[in-house]
Image (cartoon, rainbow, N blue to C red; front, side, top):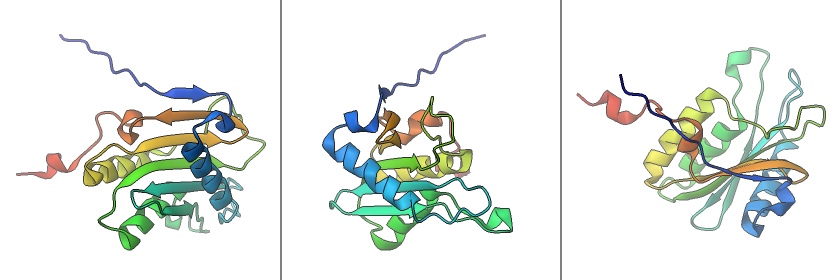
Length: 162
């Protein structure tokens, strides 16, 4: 039997205001995007912002539906918009934030499993790591060098090759 350890490496900042300027501005864009979320059922307002290689910022937010499976998370809304608008432009950074004040802020918001899988595949398509920023300007914020950091051993296109 062989035993291995997978170590997740990230920066932890007491507040998003402690980030580098480009990271902080992207986090602010995610907060602004969260303000437009449609979340009448969960009241959980999430925003995502993506910094593209061309300098453009693409945002998205969660969109709920009375038929719950019809909703979509902020991360996927933003990522799918990138493919629709700038399919051949590299993604440099992705920031995710929430507005909810009544949520435990010991940790920043964490993408769901579906979003983690989608982020990993976008990173493969991107042919470069995408920096991931999870947090809020006024709360604890984590910065990961790669989206893959939060979903090791993900399912990937190589598994589908014959």
